[in-house]
Amino acid sequence: MIDTRVGIVGDAVEPIANAVESAGGVPLVDDGAEQRDADPAFVIAVGDKALRSLLPDSSAPILPVETGISGLDSLASNRVRTELPGLLDLFSSEQCGGSATGADPQQFTVTRPVLGVDRPDGRVHALRDVTLVTAEPARISEYTVVAGTAPSPRQVTSVRADGVVVATPTGSHGYAHDAGGPRLAAETGVGAVVPIAPFSIDADHWVIPLSDIRLTVDRDDASVELRLDGRQAGSVSSTETLRLRPVTTIETIAVEQGLEKL
Image 1 (cartoon, helix red, strand yellow):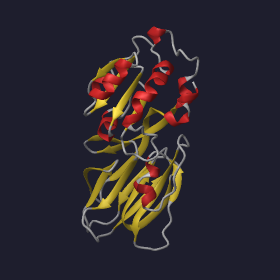
Image 2: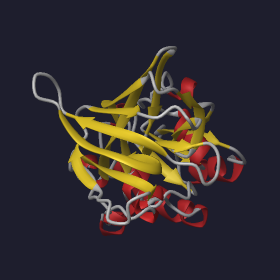
Image 3: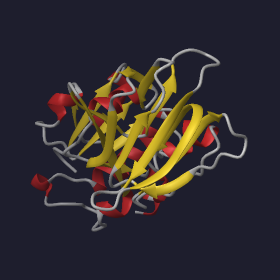
Image 4: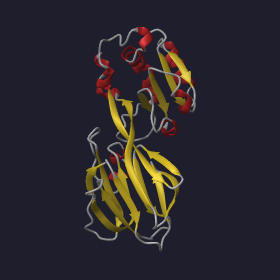
């Protein structure tokens, strides 16, 4: 466990860094971009903003702390000190000869897809969900969702609604579920397509492969916003097609899977 490096990203991380040092690890406090070059055994991301800073990819497993994201196995900050000894033993760096416990760290990680959304000015990313929604209250638009690659893409739905959300398994526990969608198990490779406040009271939601999804706005009488993981990311016109697909993955550490048994 000696010299096991632990990346730490977020605000007010001094108590986390002190806990890592007390447990025998080496804390590396830096921003998300620089963590990719620091070669830590794992990274502690404190808060949702810190987790997003590690997208679109992370070279090390991530321990989410106080992210407030349902379905992410986020750890409460007051449990970090308790769990650190087991984590340091499990994710020992190569300089220490591997895991001191003999356990496979992959048993305690979850692979989560990161969606890439292609836009005219470049690609943006989402871990949880991609949402199109009318910018003005009480205004609806019409949205078409197409899934699958050529030569046989298929239209999933064309729906009049306040918006539509496409959620990964991670995001299916949050806003998409609040809008009536199902919760999806991690590592299933599928996503949920959920209309938001649809005009038709019997509108469905769908579970489809995440491999290739296209969203279009079919009406231009209301301004439509793009939101990625709940954050506004510009507007979308009726002439634009958004292409969503998994472009990479991150690994998150699931403490609830039983580190105390090691």
